Image (tube, rainbow, N blue to C red; front, side):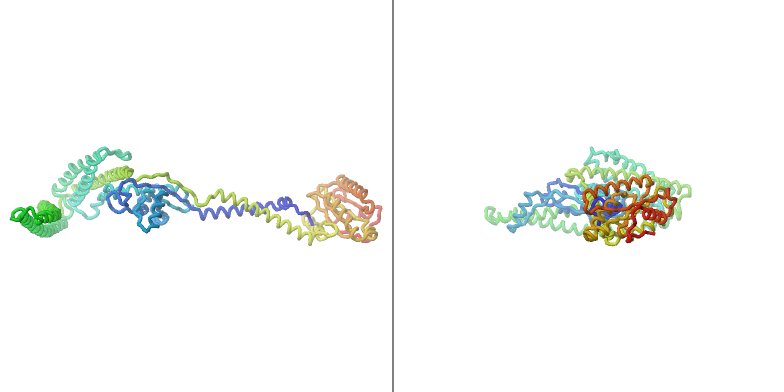
Length: 610
Protein backbone atom coordinates (compact mmCIF):
# COMPACT_ATOMS: atom_id res chain seq x y z
CA UNK A 1 0.00 0.00 0.00
CA UNK A 2 1.17 3.53 -0.73
CA UNK A 3 3.06 5.41 1.95
CA UNK A 4 1.01 7.77 4.13
CA UNK A 5 1.84 11.21 2.66
CA UNK A 6 -0.32 14.15 3.74
CA UNK A 7 1.07 16.51 1.10
CA UNK A 8 0.23 14.02 -1.63
CA UNK A 9 -3.36 13.84 -0.44
CA UNK A 10 -3.63 17.62 -0.24
CA UNK A 11 -2.21 18.09 -3.73
CA UNK A 12 -4.45 15.40 -5.16
CA UNK A 13 -7.63 16.65 -3.48
CA UNK A 14 -6.87 20.37 -3.38
CA UNK A 15 -10.14 21.07 -5.19
CA UNK A 16 -12.00 19.29 -2.39
CA UNK A 17 -10.15 21.32 0.24
CA UNK A 18 -10.96 24.53 -1.61
CA UNK A 19 -14.62 23.58 -2.07
CA UNK A 20 -15.09 22.73 1.63
CA UNK A 21 -13.33 25.95 2.69
CA UNK A 22 -15.41 28.14 0.38
CA UNK A 23 -18.67 26.39 1.26
CA UNK A 24 -17.97 26.65 4.97
CA UNK A 25 -17.04 30.33 4.68
CA UNK A 26 -20.25 31.01 2.77
CA UNK A 27 -22.26 29.24 5.50
CA UNK A 28 -20.54 31.34 8.18
CA UNK A 29 -21.23 34.52 6.21
CA UNK A 30 -24.87 33.52 5.75
CA UNK A 31 -25.19 32.86 9.49
CA UNK A 32 -23.64 36.22 10.35
CA UNK A 33 -25.83 38.03 7.87
CA UNK A 34 -29.07 36.46 9.11
CA UNK A 35 -28.26 36.78 12.82
CA UNK A 36 -26.49 40.13 12.78
CA UNK A 37 -27.90 43.05 14.76
CA UNK A 38 -26.53 46.51 15.42
CA UNK A 39 -26.83 48.17 18.81
CA UNK A 40 -26.64 51.95 19.15
CA UNK A 41 -26.44 53.66 22.53
CA UNK A 42 -26.12 57.16 23.91
CA UNK A 43 -26.09 58.54 27.48
CA UNK A 44 -28.39 61.43 28.42
CA UNK A 45 -28.45 63.45 31.62
CA UNK A 46 -31.18 65.63 33.15
CA UNK A 47 -29.87 68.92 34.55
CA UNK A 48 -32.79 70.52 36.40
CA UNK A 49 -32.85 70.49 40.19
CA UNK A 50 -36.04 68.49 40.67
CA UNK A 51 -34.66 65.39 38.97
CA UNK A 52 -32.96 64.33 42.22
CA UNK A 53 -36.42 63.96 43.74
CA UNK A 54 -37.97 62.38 40.64
CA UNK A 55 -39.72 65.50 39.32
CA UNK A 56 -39.86 67.09 35.87
CA UNK A 57 -39.20 70.84 35.44
CA UNK A 58 -42.93 71.58 35.79
CA UNK A 59 -43.15 69.68 39.10
CA UNK A 60 -44.87 66.55 37.77
CA UNK A 61 -43.54 63.05 38.31
CA UNK A 62 -40.66 62.18 35.99
CA UNK A 63 -41.24 59.35 33.51
CA UNK A 64 -38.14 58.42 31.48
CA UNK A 65 -40.10 55.82 29.50
CA UNK A 66 -41.40 58.72 27.42
CA UNK A 67 -38.11 58.49 25.52
CA UNK A 68 -39.55 55.65 23.44
CA UNK A 69 -43.17 56.78 23.49
CA UNK A 70 -45.21 56.65 20.30
CA UNK A 71 -45.15 60.42 20.00
CA UNK A 72 -41.35 60.61 20.18
CA UNK A 73 -40.74 57.67 17.84
CA UNK A 74 -43.30 58.92 15.32
CA UNK A 75 -41.72 62.37 15.18
CA UNK A 76 -38.24 60.86 14.89
CA UNK A 77 -39.23 58.55 12.02
CA UNK A 78 -41.04 61.40 10.29
CA UNK A 79 -37.93 63.57 10.49
CA UNK A 80 -36.01 60.79 8.72
CA UNK A 81 -38.67 60.47 6.05
CA UNK A 82 -39.71 57.00 7.25
CA UNK A 83 -43.35 56.13 7.74
CA UNK A 84 -43.09 52.49 8.84
CA UNK A 85 -41.41 50.45 11.56
CA UNK A 86 -42.55 52.65 14.46
CA UNK A 87 -43.74 49.75 16.63
CA UNK A 88 -40.64 47.73 15.75
CA UNK A 89 -38.36 50.57 16.81
CA UNK A 90 -40.30 51.06 20.05
CA UNK A 91 -40.03 47.38 20.95
CA UNK A 92 -36.24 47.44 20.49
CA UNK A 93 -35.57 50.69 22.35
CA UNK A 94 -34.67 50.52 26.05
CA UNK A 95 -33.71 52.97 28.78
CA UNK A 96 -31.30 51.90 31.52
CA UNK A 97 -30.45 53.74 34.72
CA UNK A 98 -26.83 54.76 35.20
CA UNK A 99 -26.19 54.72 38.94
CA UNK A 100 -22.71 55.45 40.41
CA UNK A 101 -21.06 52.61 42.28
CA UNK A 102 -21.09 54.45 45.62
CA UNK A 103 -24.80 55.15 45.25
CA UNK A 104 -25.44 51.49 44.43
CA UNK A 105 -23.64 50.46 47.58
CA UNK A 106 -25.70 52.96 49.59
CA UNK A 107 -28.95 51.66 48.12
CA UNK A 108 -28.01 48.05 48.88
CA UNK A 109 -27.17 49.04 52.45
CA UNK A 110 -30.56 50.73 52.86
CA UNK A 111 -32.35 47.71 51.47
CA UNK A 112 -30.46 45.40 53.81
CA UNK A 113 -31.62 47.55 56.73
CA UNK A 114 -35.18 47.40 55.49
CA UNK A 115 -35.27 51.11 54.64
CA UNK A 116 -36.61 52.61 51.44
CA UNK A 117 -34.22 54.23 48.98
CA UNK A 118 -35.38 57.60 47.63
CA UNK A 119 -32.55 58.06 45.15
CA UNK A 120 -33.66 58.99 41.63
CA UNK A 121 -30.88 58.81 38.97
CA UNK A 122 -30.28 61.75 36.68
CA UNK A 123 -28.36 59.90 33.96
CA UNK A 124 -29.67 57.16 31.65
CA UNK A 125 -28.42 55.02 28.81
CA UNK A 126 -30.72 54.86 25.76
CA UNK A 127 -30.18 51.78 23.59
CA UNK A 128 -31.62 50.84 20.20
CA UNK A 129 -31.19 47.46 18.50
CA UNK A 130 -31.88 47.14 14.76
CA UNK A 131 -31.71 44.27 12.29
CA UNK A 132 -28.37 43.71 10.61
CA UNK A 133 -29.85 44.17 7.12
CA UNK A 134 -30.54 47.85 7.94
CA UNK A 135 -26.90 48.62 8.69
CA UNK A 136 -24.98 50.43 11.43
CA UNK A 137 -25.62 53.89 9.96
CA UNK A 138 -29.38 53.30 10.17
CA UNK A 139 -29.13 52.48 13.88
CA UNK A 140 -27.08 55.63 14.52
CA UNK A 141 -29.41 57.91 12.52
CA UNK A 142 -32.57 56.57 14.16
CA UNK A 143 -31.20 56.84 17.71
CA UNK A 144 -29.94 60.38 17.07
CA UNK A 145 -33.38 61.28 15.69
CA UNK A 146 -35.07 59.77 18.76
CA UNK A 147 -32.90 61.77 21.19
CA UNK A 148 -33.42 64.95 19.16
CA UNK A 149 -37.17 64.38 19.02
CA UNK A 150 -37.32 63.64 22.74
CA UNK A 151 -35.37 66.80 23.56
CA UNK A 152 -37.87 68.89 21.60
CA UNK A 153 -40.96 67.20 23.00
CA UNK A 154 -39.51 67.21 26.53
CA UNK A 155 -39.01 70.96 26.36
CA UNK A 156 -42.46 71.54 24.89
CA UNK A 157 -44.05 69.29 27.49
CA UNK A 158 -42.30 70.46 30.63
CA UNK A 159 -40.59 73.78 29.87
CA UNK A 160 -42.29 75.68 27.04
CA UNK A 161 -45.73 75.30 25.53
CA UNK A 162 -45.63 74.08 21.90
CA UNK A 163 -47.42 75.62 18.96
CA UNK A 164 -50.19 73.06 18.59
CA UNK A 165 -52.56 74.63 16.07
CA UNK A 166 -52.52 73.83 12.37
CA UNK A 167 -53.36 76.52 9.81
CA UNK A 168 -56.68 76.06 8.08
CA UNK A 169 -56.67 75.17 4.41
CA UNK A 170 -59.22 74.21 1.78
CA UNK A 171 -61.98 76.18 3.49
CA UNK A 172 -63.78 77.00 0.27
CA UNK A 173 -63.89 73.32 -0.67
CA UNK A 174 -65.28 72.47 2.77
CA UNK A 175 -68.54 74.35 2.20
CA UNK A 176 -67.76 77.52 4.13
CA UNK A 177 -69.14 80.82 2.90
CA UNK A 178 -66.81 83.74 2.25
CA UNK A 179 -67.44 85.43 5.57
CA UNK A 180 -66.95 82.16 7.49
CA UNK A 181 -63.68 81.52 5.69
CA UNK A 182 -62.35 84.95 6.62
CA UNK A 183 -63.54 84.49 10.21
CA UNK A 184 -61.64 81.19 10.52
CA UNK A 185 -58.51 82.70 8.99
CA UNK A 186 -58.77 85.60 11.40
CA UNK A 187 -58.92 83.18 14.36
CA UNK A 188 -55.86 81.30 13.07
CA UNK A 189 -53.93 84.52 12.70
CA UNK A 190 -54.92 85.70 16.17
CA UNK A 191 -53.83 82.43 17.80
CA UNK A 192 -50.36 82.51 16.26
CA UNK A 193 -50.09 86.22 16.97
CA UNK A 194 -50.77 85.68 20.69
CA UNK A 195 -48.22 82.85 20.75
CA UNK A 196 -45.56 85.05 19.12
CA UNK A 197 -46.31 87.96 21.43
CA UNK A 198 -45.56 85.79 24.45
CA UNK A 199 -42.39 84.44 22.84
CA UNK A 200 -40.98 87.81 21.79
CA UNK A 201 -41.56 89.14 25.30
CA UNK A 202 -39.83 86.24 27.06
CA UNK A 203 -37.09 85.58 24.47
CA UNK A 204 -36.33 88.87 22.70
CA UNK A 205 -32.77 87.86 21.74
CA UNK A 206 -33.47 84.49 20.14
CA UNK A 207 -32.98 84.20 16.38
CA UNK A 208 -33.29 80.93 14.47
CA UNK A 209 -30.22 79.75 12.57
CA UNK A 210 -32.46 77.71 10.25
CA UNK A 211 -35.11 80.25 9.27
CA UNK A 212 -33.18 83.41 10.10
CA UNK A 213 -36.17 84.93 11.92
CA UNK A 214 -36.53 86.12 15.48
CA UNK A 215 -39.83 85.96 17.36
CA UNK A 216 -40.15 89.73 17.01
CA UNK A 217 -39.75 89.49 13.22
CA UNK A 218 -42.47 86.86 13.00
CA UNK A 219 -44.70 88.83 15.34
CA UNK A 220 -44.40 91.90 13.13
CA UNK A 221 -45.30 89.83 10.07
CA UNK A 222 -48.40 88.35 11.68
CA UNK A 223 -49.31 91.75 13.15
CA UNK A 224 -49.23 93.22 9.66
CA UNK A 225 -51.40 90.40 8.36
CA UNK A 226 -53.86 90.90 11.17
CA UNK A 227 -53.95 94.69 10.82
CA UNK A 228 -54.11 94.91 7.03
CA UNK A 229 -54.90 91.63 5.29
CA UNK A 230 -57.72 90.48 7.54
CA UNK A 231 -59.60 93.83 7.45
CA UNK A 232 -59.13 93.89 3.68
CA UNK A 233 -60.69 90.43 3.36
CA UNK A 234 -63.59 91.42 5.60
CA UNK A 235 -64.11 94.59 3.57
CA UNK A 236 -64.14 92.69 0.27
CA UNK A 237 -66.64 90.19 1.63
CA UNK A 238 -68.94 92.85 3.03
CA UNK A 239 -68.83 94.91 -0.17
CA UNK A 240 -71.90 93.82 -1.98
CA UNK A 241 -71.93 91.68 0.17
CA UNK A 242 -70.24 88.65 -1.40
CA UNK A 243 -72.25 85.55 -0.48
CA UNK A 244 -72.26 82.04 -1.93
CA UNK A 245 -75.45 80.87 -0.20
CA UNK A 246 -77.14 83.51 1.91
CA UNK A 247 -79.79 81.16 3.30
CA UNK A 248 -77.26 78.69 4.63
CA UNK A 249 -75.04 81.43 6.02
CA UNK A 250 -78.01 83.06 7.77
CA UNK A 251 -78.97 79.76 9.35
CA UNK A 252 -75.47 79.36 10.70
CA UNK A 253 -75.46 82.89 12.09
CA UNK A 254 -78.90 82.35 13.66
CA UNK A 255 -77.66 79.17 15.34
CA UNK A 256 -74.61 81.06 16.60
CA UNK A 257 -76.84 83.74 18.14
CA UNK A 258 -79.11 81.14 19.77
CA UNK A 259 -76.10 79.27 21.16
CA UNK A 260 -74.72 82.54 22.55
CA UNK A 261 -78.03 83.25 24.28
CA UNK A 262 -78.09 79.79 25.85
CA UNK A 263 -74.51 80.11 27.06
CA UNK A 264 -75.29 83.54 28.46
CA UNK A 265 -78.12 82.09 30.55
CA UNK A 266 -75.74 79.48 32.01
CA UNK A 267 -73.17 82.15 32.84
CA UNK A 268 -75.84 84.40 34.38
CA UNK A 269 -76.97 81.58 36.67
CA UNK A 270 -73.39 80.95 37.71
CA UNK A 271 -72.86 84.69 38.23
CA UNK A 272 -75.93 84.91 40.48
CA UNK A 273 -74.73 81.92 42.50
CA UNK A 274 -71.30 83.46 42.97
CA UNK A 275 -72.85 86.76 43.96
CA UNK A 276 -74.76 85.01 46.73
CA UNK A 277 -71.63 83.25 47.99
CA UNK A 278 -69.70 86.50 48.00
CA UNK A 279 -72.50 88.18 49.94
CA UNK A 280 -72.48 85.38 52.53
CA UNK A 281 -68.71 85.66 52.92
CA UNK A 282 -69.07 89.41 53.47
CA UNK A 283 -71.63 88.89 56.22
CA UNK A 284 -69.52 86.20 57.91
CA UNK A 285 -66.48 88.45 57.83
CA UNK A 286 -68.46 91.28 59.44
CA UNK A 287 -69.67 88.96 62.22
CA UNK A 288 -66.11 87.73 62.78
CA UNK A 289 -64.81 91.29 63.17
CA UNK A 290 -67.54 92.10 65.68
CA UNK A 291 -66.71 88.90 67.60
CA UNK A 292 -63.06 89.85 68.04
CA UNK A 293 -63.00 93.59 68.27
CA UNK A 294 -66.50 94.79 69.34
CA UNK A 295 -67.26 92.86 72.56
CA UNK A 296 -66.44 93.14 76.26
CA UNK A 297 -64.31 89.98 76.61
CA UNK A 298 -61.11 90.11 78.65
CA UNK A 299 -58.40 90.70 76.07
CA UNK A 300 -55.70 89.42 78.38
CA UNK A 301 -57.18 85.96 78.91
CA UNK A 302 -56.86 82.68 77.08
CA UNK A 303 -60.16 83.31 75.25
CA UNK A 304 -58.58 86.23 73.45
CA UNK A 305 -55.60 84.16 72.39
CA UNK A 306 -57.80 81.32 71.13
CA UNK A 307 -59.93 83.78 69.21
CA UNK A 308 -56.83 85.13 67.45
CA UNK A 309 -55.69 81.64 66.53
CA UNK A 310 -59.12 80.75 65.21
CA UNK A 311 -59.33 84.00 63.33
CA UNK A 312 -55.91 83.45 61.74
CA UNK A 313 -56.77 79.97 60.53
CA UNK A 314 -60.23 80.89 59.34
CA UNK A 315 -59.08 84.02 57.58
CA UNK A 316 -56.40 82.15 55.69
CA UNK A 317 -58.83 79.62 54.19
CA UNK A 318 -61.60 82.21 53.75
CA UNK A 319 -59.28 84.69 52.10
CA UNK A 320 -58.11 82.17 49.50
CA UNK A 321 -61.66 81.02 48.74
CA UNK A 322 -63.01 84.56 48.65
CA UNK A 323 -60.35 85.73 46.18
CA UNK A 324 -61.01 82.82 43.82
CA UNK A 325 -64.72 83.59 43.89
CA UNK A 326 -64.10 87.24 43.08
CA UNK A 327 -61.77 86.35 40.19
CA UNK A 328 -64.25 83.86 38.75
CA UNK A 329 -67.07 86.41 39.09
CA UNK A 330 -65.06 89.06 37.25
CA UNK A 331 -64.13 86.60 34.50
CA UNK A 332 -67.77 85.62 33.97
CA UNK A 333 -68.77 89.28 33.85
CA UNK A 334 -66.13 89.92 31.17
CA UNK A 335 -67.34 86.90 29.18
CA UNK A 336 -70.94 88.09 29.33
CA UNK A 337 -70.02 91.56 28.13
CA UNK A 338 -67.87 90.16 25.32
CA UNK A 339 -70.59 87.72 24.34
CA UNK A 340 -73.16 90.50 24.19
CA UNK A 341 -70.92 92.56 21.91
CA UNK A 342 -70.21 89.57 19.70
CA UNK A 343 -73.89 88.66 19.52
CA UNK A 344 -74.86 92.20 18.55
CA UNK A 345 -72.23 92.15 15.79
CA UNK A 346 -73.47 88.78 14.57
CA UNK A 347 -77.04 90.09 14.52
CA UNK A 348 -75.91 93.00 12.39
CA UNK A 349 -74.22 90.60 9.98
CA UNK A 350 -77.36 88.49 9.90
CA UNK A 351 -79.46 91.49 8.93
CA UNK A 352 -76.99 92.41 6.21
CA UNK A 353 -76.85 88.93 4.65
CA UNK A 354 -80.60 88.47 4.88
CA UNK A 355 -81.01 91.61 2.83
CA UNK A 356 -78.65 90.18 0.20
CA UNK A 357 -81.07 87.41 -0.76
CA UNK A 358 -79.94 84.05 -2.12
CA UNK A 359 -76.55 84.89 -3.69
CA UNK A 360 -74.60 88.10 -3.36
CA UNK A 361 -72.18 89.34 -6.00
CA UNK A 362 -71.39 88.17 -9.53
CA UNK A 363 -69.01 85.47 -10.81
CA UNK A 364 -66.16 87.89 -11.33
CA UNK A 365 -66.33 89.24 -7.79
CA UNK A 366 -66.65 85.69 -6.43
CA UNK A 367 -63.56 84.61 -8.34
CA UNK A 368 -61.65 87.60 -6.98
CA UNK A 369 -62.57 86.99 -3.34
CA UNK A 370 -61.89 83.26 -3.67
CA UNK A 371 -58.46 84.01 -5.08
CA UNK A 372 -57.71 86.32 -2.15
CA UNK A 373 -58.88 83.74 0.41
CA UNK A 374 -56.80 80.95 -1.17
CA UNK A 375 -53.78 83.24 -1.35
CA UNK A 376 -54.09 84.16 2.32
CA UNK A 377 -54.54 80.50 3.28
CA UNK A 378 -51.27 79.66 1.53
CA UNK A 379 -49.57 82.62 3.20
CA UNK A 380 -50.60 81.33 6.63
CA UNK A 381 -49.39 77.83 5.75
CA UNK A 382 -46.00 79.10 4.58
CA UNK A 383 -45.44 81.33 7.58
CA UNK A 384 -46.68 78.65 9.95
CA UNK A 385 -43.90 76.35 8.73
CA UNK A 386 -41.39 79.08 9.53
CA UNK A 387 -42.91 79.64 12.97
CA UNK A 388 -42.96 75.90 13.64
CA UNK A 389 -39.30 75.42 12.63
CA UNK A 390 -38.25 78.44 14.68
CA UNK A 391 -40.17 77.16 17.69
CA UNK A 392 -38.68 73.65 17.39
CA UNK A 393 -35.15 75.04 17.18
CA UNK A 394 -35.83 77.28 20.16
CA UNK A 395 -37.14 74.35 22.19
CA UNK A 396 -34.05 72.33 21.33
CA UNK A 397 -31.85 75.19 22.48
CA UNK A 398 -33.84 75.40 25.72
CA UNK A 399 -33.49 71.65 26.21
CA UNK A 400 -29.73 72.10 26.57
CA UNK A 401 -30.40 73.69 29.95
CA UNK A 402 -32.46 70.72 31.05
CA UNK A 403 -31.19 67.75 29.06
CA UNK A 404 -27.83 66.92 27.51
CA UNK A 405 -26.05 63.95 25.98
CA UNK A 406 -22.99 62.92 27.97
CA UNK A 407 -21.58 60.58 25.32
CA UNK A 408 -21.50 60.34 21.57
CA UNK A 409 -23.68 57.76 19.84
CA UNK A 410 -21.82 54.44 19.69
CA UNK A 411 -22.78 51.56 17.39
CA UNK A 412 -21.45 48.02 17.58
CA UNK A 413 -22.46 44.75 15.90
CA UNK A 414 -23.60 41.72 17.84
CA UNK A 415 -21.41 39.54 15.59
CA UNK A 416 -17.90 40.45 14.44
CA UNK A 417 -18.34 39.27 10.85
CA UNK A 418 -14.67 39.61 9.87
CA UNK A 419 -13.52 37.63 12.89
CA UNK A 420 -16.15 34.96 12.29
CA UNK A 421 -15.16 34.70 8.62
CA UNK A 422 -11.47 34.41 9.51
CA UNK A 423 -12.17 31.71 12.10
CA UNK A 424 -14.57 29.95 9.73
CA UNK A 425 -12.04 30.04 6.88
CA UNK A 426 -9.31 28.52 9.03
CA UNK A 427 -11.65 25.97 10.60
CA UNK A 428 -13.15 24.76 7.34
CA UNK A 429 -9.73 24.77 5.66
CA UNK A 430 -8.55 22.36 8.35
CA UNK A 431 -11.76 20.37 7.94
CA UNK A 432 -11.14 20.25 4.18
CA UNK A 433 -7.56 19.10 4.73
CA UNK A 434 -8.70 16.41 7.15
CA UNK A 435 -11.38 15.32 4.71
CA UNK A 436 -8.84 15.21 1.87
CA UNK A 437 -6.54 13.01 3.99
CA UNK A 438 -9.43 10.73 4.93
CA UNK A 439 -10.64 10.46 1.34
CA UNK A 440 -7.13 9.99 0.00
CA UNK A 441 -6.22 7.40 2.57
CA UNK A 442 -9.51 5.60 2.07
CA UNK A 443 -8.83 5.55 -1.64
CA UNK A 444 -5.39 4.11 -0.92
CA UNK A 445 -7.02 1.31 1.07
CA UNK A 446 -9.54 0.64 -1.68
CA UNK A 447 -6.90 0.66 -4.37
CA UNK A 448 -4.64 -1.53 -2.28
CA UNK A 449 -7.24 -4.21 -1.66
CA UNK A 450 -8.88 -4.07 -5.08
CA UNK A 451 -6.32 -2.76 -7.58
CA UNK A 452 -2.85 -3.47 -6.13
CA UNK A 453 -0.87 -6.66 -6.69
CA UNK A 454 0.14 -7.84 -3.21
CA UNK A 455 3.43 -9.40 -4.35
CA UNK A 456 4.81 -6.45 -6.31
CA UNK A 457 2.96 -3.51 -4.76
CA UNK A 458 2.13 -2.33 -8.28
CA UNK A 459 -1.33 -1.84 -9.86
CA UNK A 460 -2.70 -5.31 -10.58
CA UNK A 461 -3.98 -6.90 -13.77
CA UNK A 462 -7.43 -5.30 -13.40
CA UNK A 463 -5.86 -1.85 -13.32
CA UNK A 464 -3.75 -2.70 -16.34
CA UNK A 465 -6.85 -3.78 -18.26
CA UNK A 466 -8.69 -0.62 -17.15
CA UNK A 467 -5.82 1.56 -18.33
CA UNK A 468 -5.73 -0.17 -21.69
CA UNK A 469 -9.50 0.28 -22.07
CA UNK A 470 -9.14 3.98 -21.27
CA UNK A 471 -6.38 4.40 -23.86
CA UNK A 472 -8.49 2.58 -26.44
CA UNK A 473 -11.44 4.84 -25.68
CA UNK A 474 -9.24 7.89 -26.29
CA UNK A 475 -8.56 6.67 -29.85
CA UNK A 476 -5.21 6.44 -31.59
CA UNK A 477 -2.09 6.66 -29.54
CA UNK A 478 -0.03 9.87 -29.78
CA UNK A 479 3.43 10.03 -31.25
CA UNK A 480 6.34 8.87 -29.09
CA UNK A 481 4.17 6.56 -27.01
CA UNK A 482 6.16 3.57 -25.73
CA UNK A 483 5.09 0.25 -24.23
CA UNK A 484 7.65 -1.65 -22.11
CA UNK A 485 7.58 -5.24 -20.88
CA UNK A 486 9.65 -6.60 -18.00
CA UNK A 487 9.99 -10.24 -17.06
CA UNK A 488 11.46 -11.28 -13.68
CA UNK A 489 13.09 -14.59 -14.74
CA UNK A 490 14.75 -15.59 -11.45
CA UNK A 491 11.50 -15.94 -9.50
CA UNK A 492 11.23 -19.73 -9.80
CA UNK A 493 14.90 -20.23 -8.99
CA UNK A 494 14.79 -18.07 -5.87
CA UNK A 495 11.54 -19.64 -4.68
CA UNK A 496 12.96 -23.16 -5.02
CA UNK A 497 16.31 -22.34 -3.45
CA UNK A 498 15.29 -19.98 -0.65
CA UNK A 499 11.55 -20.27 -0.37
CA UNK A 500 8.58 -18.29 -1.62
CA UNK A 501 9.06 -15.49 0.87
CA UNK A 502 12.53 -14.72 -0.48
CA UNK A 503 11.36 -14.99 -4.07
CA UNK A 504 8.44 -12.64 -3.40
CA UNK A 505 10.70 -10.20 -1.54
CA UNK A 506 13.18 -10.01 -4.43
CA UNK A 507 10.24 -9.67 -6.86
CA UNK A 508 8.96 -6.67 -4.84
CA UNK A 509 12.46 -5.14 -4.96
CA UNK A 510 12.54 -5.60 -8.72
CA UNK A 511 9.07 -4.07 -9.07
CA UNK A 512 10.20 -1.11 -6.98
CA UNK A 513 13.20 -0.52 -9.28
CA UNK A 514 10.93 -0.66 -12.32
CA UNK A 515 8.33 1.61 -10.71
CA UNK A 516 11.08 4.16 -10.04
CA UNK A 517 11.43 4.59 -13.81
CA UNK A 518 7.93 6.04 -14.08
CA UNK A 519 6.78 9.64 -14.03
CA UNK A 520 3.43 11.35 -13.58
CA UNK A 521 2.79 10.84 -17.30
CA UNK A 522 3.49 7.08 -17.20
CA UNK A 523 1.73 3.99 -15.89
CA UNK A 524 3.48 0.83 -14.58
CA UNK A 525 1.51 -2.21 -13.47
CA UNK A 526 1.81 -5.92 -12.76
CA UNK A 527 0.64 -8.38 -15.43
CA UNK A 528 1.02 -11.38 -13.13
CA UNK A 529 3.63 -14.21 -12.80
CA UNK A 530 6.56 -11.79 -12.47
CA UNK A 531 5.58 -9.85 -15.56
CA UNK A 532 5.41 -6.02 -15.53
CA UNK A 533 4.16 -3.65 -18.23
CA UNK A 534 4.66 0.08 -18.56
CA UNK A 535 3.05 2.79 -20.70
CA UNK A 536 5.14 5.94 -21.28
CA UNK A 537 3.97 9.15 -22.99
CA UNK A 538 6.38 11.44 -24.77
CA UNK A 539 8.96 8.67 -24.88
CA UNK A 540 10.70 7.89 -28.18
CA UNK A 541 12.94 4.89 -28.87
CA UNK A 542 16.11 6.67 -27.77
CA UNK A 543 14.57 7.69 -24.47
CA UNK A 544 13.20 4.18 -23.99
CA UNK A 545 16.66 2.72 -24.53
CA UNK A 546 18.06 5.14 -21.99
CA UNK A 547 15.42 4.12 -19.45
CA UNK A 548 16.30 0.46 -19.89
CA UNK A 549 20.01 1.25 -19.49
CA UNK A 550 19.26 3.07 -16.25
CA UNK A 551 17.30 0.08 -15.04
CA UNK A 552 20.13 -2.26 -15.95
CA UNK A 553 22.61 -0.17 -13.99
CA UNK A 554 20.34 -0.20 -10.96
CA UNK A 555 19.89 -3.98 -11.23
CA UNK A 556 23.65 -4.48 -11.39
CA UNK A 557 24.14 -2.31 -8.32
CA UNK A 558 21.43 -4.26 -6.51
CA UNK A 559 23.02 -7.59 -7.45
CA UNK A 560 26.40 -6.41 -6.25
CA UNK A 561 24.86 -5.72 -2.88
CA UNK A 562 22.85 -8.96 -2.82
CA UNK A 563 24.91 -11.59 -4.73
CA UNK A 564 22.95 -14.51 -3.23
CA UNK A 565 19.61 -13.08 -4.35
CA UNK A 566 20.56 -11.68 -7.72
CA UNK A 567 17.84 -10.37 -10.01
CA UNK A 568 17.59 -11.82 -13.46
CA UNK A 569 15.20 -10.21 -15.91
CA UNK A 570 14.40 -9.48 -19.52
CA UNK A 571 12.99 -6.25 -20.95
CA UNK A 572 11.77 -4.98 -24.28
CA UNK A 573 10.09 -1.82 -25.60
CA UNK A 574 7.98 -0.81 -28.60
CA UNK A 575 7.40 2.78 -29.71
CA UNK A 576 4.36 3.86 -31.73
CA UNK A 577 6.38 5.86 -34.29
CA UNK A 578 8.92 3.09 -34.94
CA UNK A 579 6.41 0.25 -35.03
CA UNK A 580 3.75 2.24 -36.89
CA UNK A 581 1.22 0.91 -34.41
CA UNK A 582 -1.17 3.41 -32.80
CA UNK A 583 -3.46 0.97 -31.02
CA UNK A 584 -2.50 0.12 -27.48
CA UNK A 585 -3.08 -3.59 -27.78
CA UNK A 586 -1.19 -3.87 -31.08
CA UNK A 587 1.72 -1.90 -29.69
CA UNK A 588 1.78 -4.08 -26.56
CA UNK A 589 1.88 -7.20 -28.73
CA UNK A 590 4.95 -5.82 -30.49
CA UNK A 591 6.65 -5.32 -27.12
CA UNK A 592 5.82 -8.89 -26.03
CA UNK A 593 7.08 -10.24 -29.34
CA UNK A 594 10.41 -8.49 -28.78
CA UNK A 595 10.47 -9.91 -25.26
CA UNK A 596 9.96 -13.47 -26.60
CA UNK A 597 12.61 -12.99 -29.25
CA UNK A 598 15.22 -12.10 -26.65
CA UNK A 599 18.21 -14.42 -26.18
CA UNK A 600 16.98 -15.89 -22.94
CA UNK A 601 13.92 -18.12 -23.19
CA UNK A 602 10.70 -16.89 -21.60
CA UNK A 603 9.57 -18.86 -18.53
CA UNK A 604 6.62 -21.19 -18.98
CA UNK A 605 4.64 -19.26 -16.38
CA UNK A 606 4.81 -16.05 -18.38
CA UNK A 607 1.82 -14.89 -20.47
CA UNK A 608 1.10 -11.91 -22.61
CA UNK A 609 -1.57 -9.26 -22.39
CA UNK A 610 -3.74 -8.89 -25.47
